[in-house]
Image (cartoon, rainbow, N blue to C red; front, side, top):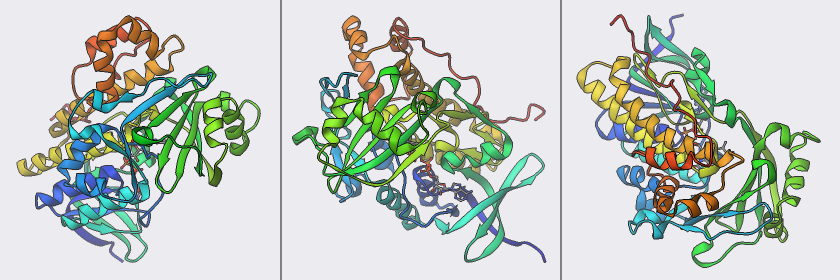
Length: 422
Ligand SMILES: Cc1cc2nc3c(=O)[nH]c(=O)nc-3n(C[C@H](O)[C@H](O)[C@H](O)COP(=O)(O)OP(=O)(O)OC[C@H]3O[C@@H](n4cnc5c(N)ncnc54)[C@H](O)[C@@H]3O)c2cc1C
């Protein structure tokens, strides 16, 4: 029997922040957009802490006031660090950096935040096939021409598309299918996390602060206050460190809590809820960000260690940028890889800014305090990076950071797979 077929302008794998943002932008421009999503929403996701620059893509999507007025957020005004011996530093308040309204950002319950983003894309006219799993790409020679979809309700069909966007998150569909995954070896950490109810919270404008609490050996905890008296709390470190005595996540988690006084004191009155979750293989980038008829975005393109909460911002901003690039390629009637050179260069410049800061963070010789004592004039640049203003020139800043930490060269890969023979 012949394979069932459907046609669309833009096929998108995954309805997370990257896929839904791209779908909304393209649908608003009148394109026929089909999102294929494996899970039924609302679905769980880790990654609850936003950075101030999320404001800009959310504004483009028309969602700032809906996020601000929703019940699934806690306003976040700052990020603060806690030393290995449990001493809390002065927070970085975003309002000291900018008086723009983006200075108030949010901690979000991702299941509801992501559902809002998806609903917005559907309101703008995108179509959704769900629950449905993408099994393969359709190809015509070098060109990607759509997706083979396995839908619970409709069975298997071919979704033919003028252009395909891979927003499949850390499943990284195109990377795995094409052998494009390149790990950032020095950043191969793992995380173990869970949730507490009734743990200690700060008050006033510090209530929604993200806390990063250091462990010896450059491990760290996140402590993220969420609505309904819940906190998200997780530990990130080298696998060898975390697995040094046992592989049981619960035992490891509580051993590390006991090693960080600030975290132990905060969790003490709380009740742990749900499972202990584990993930590894942090930090990778695809060998290519695009090919003929295909564009990668969000975690499906690159994933960075979450220490500075950059993932959702890069997914939203990358979604908007990929959609704009796809729209102008469709307008030109040419979706070959060369059309996405500028998209790749610009997006990866932003990723590199954050990547350099993440590398500095993990350098044993580096401390923010010592760096700022030596370079008080660099306070603005540091905060600018932390708030997410990543798409500007940070070279002079990282030259100064380089006196204290080893700063890596930009990764050479990530550019589109352009056919040199034309
Ligand atoms: C431990 C940890 C902590 C983090 N903390 C933060 C944080 O505090 N702040 C922050 O901003 N970010 C954080 N992140 C990162 C953040 O979670 C991600 O960057 C963000 O979710 C990326 O969005 P996305 O749209 O690219 O992918 P996702 O949100 O993962 O969405 C991808 C979607 O694709 C679907 N999909 C995948 N494969 C298929 C398929 N074959 N067929 C159909 N559908 C498919 C999935 O079901 C999913 O819904 C953290 C990540 C980790 C691992």
